[in-house]
Length: 122
Length: 122
Image (cartoon, rainbow over all chains, first blue to last red; front, side, top):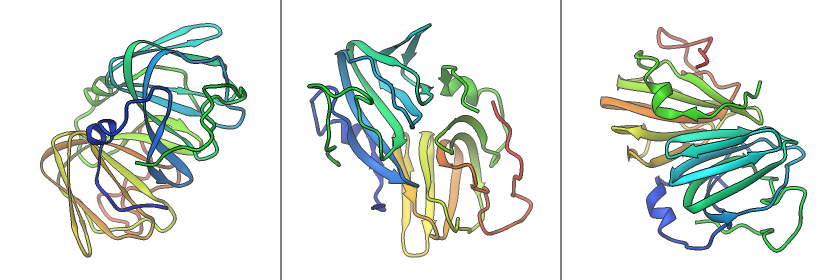
């Protein structure tokens, strides 16, 4: 459902502490806007049908691809095309905004202890 | 086409000066990420089929709706649901990121001198 609220990114980020647990902060055209706090190494995965945008709000994010390594800092974003294997790594705590379809599962084709099946909305 | 480039928002904003002329800086899942510089008053319009996200990167943006007025500052966003009449106003220069389907025309249901039919990509 589309809510007509002003969303303050920093305010939303202040409402949770967990790492690797994206929170939904907006929805439009079948896509979700999510915020997440990352620290450490995630898991290699891909999303079969969905492109995924990572935008760094705070800190730095490394995204390893099979053939290159992307380094993102605050104010930068990168779009991972569907089907592309990627491994997000945050050496220090990093805050990101994600844009992706509602259908995206955080661990993509992998189901493990990092999989979050039901996302909180803030 | 999805390009696998790191996009630096400030760098992209430094590449143009025109107001009310959104530049495409990313594409995913049939949606576009755009950057725009706004100053002054736009035109009342709506998008029949598309929800539209405005995120403020610099400055402040007023969005008038028929029954309320939204004030957005840096780090805040607002989603205008499809069909909702809106009028963006920037008293001073304001920089925004937009997230919306490829099909969106900037002036929505209105065609006038502010209509941009073909968007530049940066």
